[in-house]
Image 1 (cartoon, rainbow, N blue to C red):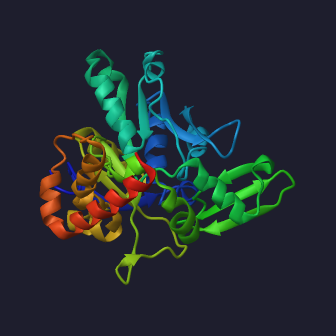
Image 2: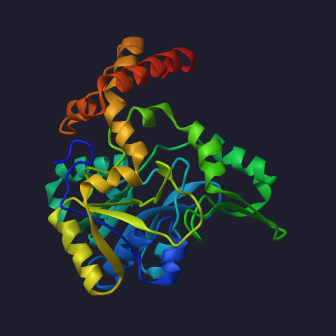
Amino acid sequence: MHPEWGPLLAVRTGWALDADVRFRGSSGGVLSALMIHLLESGQVQFVAHVAASAHDPLRSERRISRNRAEVLTGAGSRYAPAAAAVALETLFASGERFAFVGKPCDVAALRAYVQQRPQLQPQLVLAASFMCAGVPSQHGTNEVLAALGSVAGEVVHFQYRGNGWPGYATARTRDGNEARMDYNRSWGQLLGPRLQLRCKLCPDGTGEFADLVCADAWYGKDGYPDFDEQDGRSLLITRTPRGESLVLAAMAAQAVVALAAEADDISGMQPYQVTRKRVVLGRWLAVGLRTGVWPRFRGLHLRAALWRGGVMPALRNAWGTFKRVGRVGV
């Protein structure tokens, strides 16, 4: 149990060996490749994941996929509200075995649901997640569209990332015109500042309740991630024997290539997640003092993470959060 990264069985970097899957994924396509492997090997009957809404390309919804083509409809990140854990009972209604892909909070909800209904456990073959920096409000998407010069009602296709690494935010309209924006601007300047406050208070951005987790295995550049376009590379963390078994089988089947890495390597690829966990107790302190509401989490080793980062960064975050909550409320 690592104080910042949670349960660790193995840490790897890699990519999908299918060039199309690697290209379409946000960061090497490993998560999509693993889901396709589960389906094609018969281990699951379907995968529950999030993709663009069939009715509105600017919205996101949970999908059920039963083959490679359907899985790839959800390739690439969705930086807007999405309820992957809505109506969980419907996933179990058919009695089929399935894999679930969701944000860390979605996976935590699914685990709690199954824990209360242990007879359902055999149907949940795998719970997978990805590292999450938080969910921007839908207003962030609207701001990206406005910056692209697109009108929401005319957009027939919209993606936040993918088709390269890190890929471009891309909008295509009914008349066939396409506009795009690089990741540094779309996430760094427009979407990132629209994060919901509750996401800034979340201590689990790394999917500690999942069987396995994927993320961008960013290359470093002067201490910061390098967002220049290049071939995608995924960070892959296995947390349970079930997750590790799947990865080894997928490697043997040549669905993915994965190279051994160390826990100490993760902070260079995901520096935001290190800071986030080290300072979250400071943010909770601010919210508690402002509102009288004190979030409670167990088993995430938050005090150990705080001491590893030092008290002063947590106190600075506490002061910033205190001022923000005073302006906008919770």
